[in-house]
Image (cartoon, rainbow over all chains, first blue to last red; front, side, top):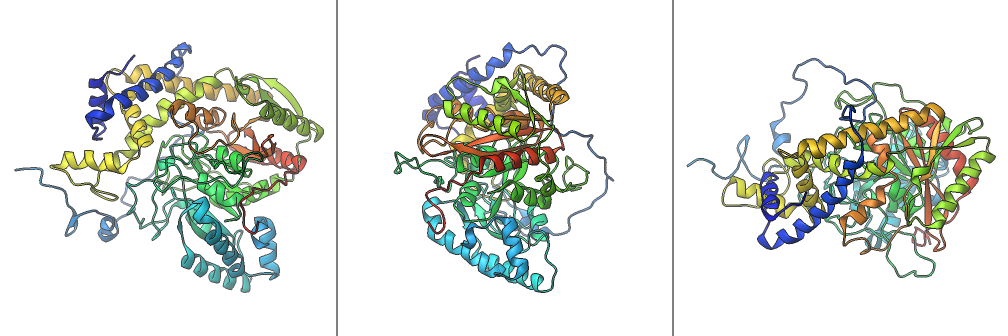
Length: 95
Length: 492
């Protein structure tokens, strides 16, 4: 599997990372190097093996579905790059 | 020198009144002042805060209310959120971030009386094995090559700042996180002890997320016992982390004195790789001989999927990272770079805020999770992960712990292994399997190579059996009598 220019552009768009045209060849080269190396996993027989999603050697606990935190908008907004009153502010998204 | 004491010794001195927490903290702050401009181990030094904490510790000592870490100055990896203290994760994108809350692990350390000297340097978002990807500059390893003292070596990564700080006596101990080896590999490179406990032993709450199913907070110190003391404070159930283990925390420090008589130690043959320096093999064999002399039996075993752990990791970790790092959008916290519209703002913020390695891993993660590739890459990697856990589970039917080298190479120089990302990834070959399986492991200094650089030995144990890991680690430490010192250190 080899990533072409268009694929690199597509995944950069999916990842919401701006990539300049002149960065693409280098990225393409590095990503192909990594993906090519990863493909050695195709040697492994995984037939009938259940995928392992995590390393926790126990069952996840259930908890009450209740509000247990909150009520401090100033703390929540303290690191906002831009705000308008008790809201996060972003550039206009509707005309 | 106060900065040369172990945590256990300093506790005794504080309780006996031989010196105060203020004396001890000031000695470390002076050492930081003298050496940090060169080592760059700390991103943020908390002088005033540390002195306030030291005075509070002295008051507690005077009242006879000392807890397990009262008055002990520590270095905190800049991935742990600390209330009111800037937390960058080594990234530009979190440059302006001051958490309004305290991570559970650091809150536990504060509860037990620890003093925080500052926040330590690290590879950006913990992605790296050399500390070269930090947005706040590289860290210099305090160790020097005997023949080439001018070369600036890397401290390993990603927790390179904490490891260098503890090795150079700029802290008595510290915190790190280990996702693919980020505690054990820098511990090995800096000639100190580092522990990655069982997944779930230390809460991840308030630790900036990299790959949630792999992120393990853990301690650094200069002795095995000191790591046991630190882990005893850091560990414990936390309802705020759904993967936190609701299990009692054993007396890890007591386990250090247990000895290894009658234990069976597995020697997995797959940890012998092409190009591994002969000295690493010699240190490994020496470690096995020490354990036999101490009464353990060593047994050749096989973990046949070991070589597939690293490529599986480089699917799973970037996949989780691409999802976790979606939160950095320039809206709620962190850096913002303005754009023509909201989408342009996201794209420019993330392009300017993330460094090259982080962008690379987000792209790999996005690719392996994208439609049409999910089964071929991500699902297959999760199945391989199951096989890696099975290798350990089967090994632990026959043995109590495994002994391996921590890293395939000695510390390298800044600028080396930088051209090909995969060459850098290979640093974590021996540490990644324990992260994927969630089993506990320690790195202990086992000796020096011909250049006079430290070589780490790794002990891997059963889930939630850190006690055996500590007992084997402490036995190695006693036999090794490792007393070599880094060239750059406080008072040198």
